[in-house]
Image (tube, rainbow, N blue to C red; front, side):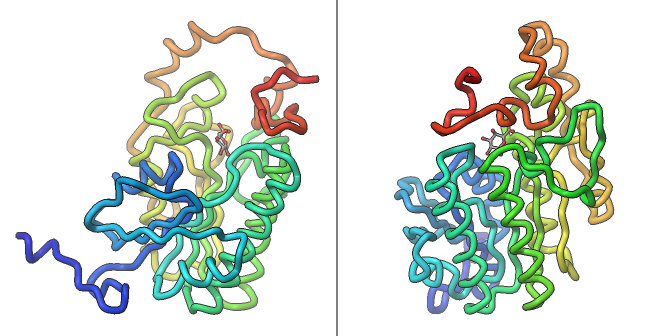
Length: 283
Ligand code: 15L
């Protein structure tokens, strides 16, 4: 049993499992994925911040992806990258530029130089946040970012498209809604994804043969979804969780919202302004 679980490492690479790098590994989404994917892949974790609870099947390499040298070091000997690293809400332009534009470019370019074929990019519903809530959109709509953060996610999707077409990289974009053990408010009833459903999508992104460039939505099987996730279904995604059982309790607590926010899928991000706190009242 113990022998079966053992991984065989040579020069930092696991020989009997896919070597998967998770960037932004100190964050919340990564902590869910590490738990859900434990044992399935040899996980290399990387973040600018240290991680104190590294498991015995995980390796940690600290790195700042805004420096190419670090991006090259962390992507060496890897089969697939799950790129979660970056700034995860609206913020000042300099912050978005360094973490989400320069950092993302470095990860793609380092992957190309290190011959890493597959990249999963954690893009966001905020790449399309200025679509209205009365519209259902699929993976083929043109972007409508709701923030500088959303623009950086559109940039990431576009860079992935370039690296797929020009360099034959295999790119899987997950436009994540909101990852949480449970949906937390009315808007999230539409865009919620449970940790185990996200892990299923990530596994599809890592293991599905013949990926070239795909965009899927990271949502569970939500009755109130604004996204037509047919592309994920086509690739075998069968979400196990639904937000509807939480709806009555959430809606009973929900206060009437600002109609400008209520109109758009991106919620508060459509109003958020400089200062990096999308939950501040609008100016
Ligand atoms: C995101 O893209 C953010 O990373 C996350 O913090 C949430 O704000 C989420 O979107 C959301 O829209 O709920």
